Length: 174
Length: 82
Image (cartoon, rainbow over all chains, first blue to last red; front, side, top):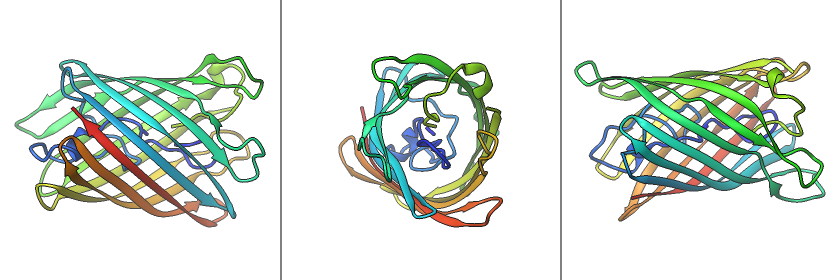
């Protein structure tokens, strides 16, 4: 899921297997910013190779990389996101961005009500501007909910506890 | 630094076995003092290409909450599911 670095945050990090398998109903997840609560099928992989761009104030920034998801056990998905980031005016060009690690756990899956709810804590390994060092320095919690009908709906709210993370070399990828 | 919040909602619909389309709105609060919150609107979809491969894409405008200045975002990806 879910943004890049700076004023627009990408929440589309986590899997949306529904977009790939027609047998399943569609919720959200990539390419949407809003995540979905559905974990990857057990012992299956979903890998997004992606790029994005955000323009504001005449400046561009974005990233390109891989969003890798694995269904570990029923209702549990592991995620890592590895990207390179770029920004207008950055003389260094593209550089390795923060690495994300996440676990999606679906704790409500009510098929009769078409309701699913997941919690998706994620951790970022931030890369400070000084080369050669990185540290686990952020933590965010995400909870997603969805329901089916004529259309599928996914909604979520997330927080990022930046203050508890120590020095921030860059803003985190979302 | 401060605790920031994001809220979003996405609606999607499968229009055929291979194609789904959707819309969403998402708001991200400022991450740090002096930052601006951003509201993002988007339309997107996915197309099943062949075997495990699908094309996913979305795009739309963004609005900076306090200044009302606008921008744009775009996303393009290939999903491999197996």
